[in-house]
Image (cartoon, rainbow, N blue to C red; front, side, top):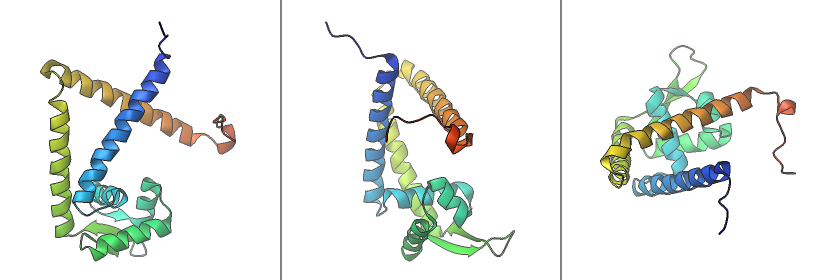
Length: 163
């Protein structure tokens, strides 16, 4: 009888599968709405913030300034976002959604939520809340690990095992 991989390996494998399939679902829904996944992430972050500075957007999305500029340019050409001087510092530029961008955002969010409801419906009713709580706890623990790791000086970070 083959031995089961260690729990940490199984945990990593199942999370990787969940992330991969969730991203595939999101990509499909974004593409149907005429957006790339990166455009959707930018739209989502601008929605969340109400107005987002270009530097902050680039940092949060882990994109170079030039890549973010191209993405916001595309969103502007599609009529989904626009740039404006920041209210607190007119030297800064921030992106905001247009009415059309807000409408598209809500449509995509509705589709994402419908997909999640469909997936949740495959779980027995009495396990749905506990599944949510477990995933929420794992997400927070992972976020805390990433935050701790980011706060280490680069030279103090443990090796990754890759050259």
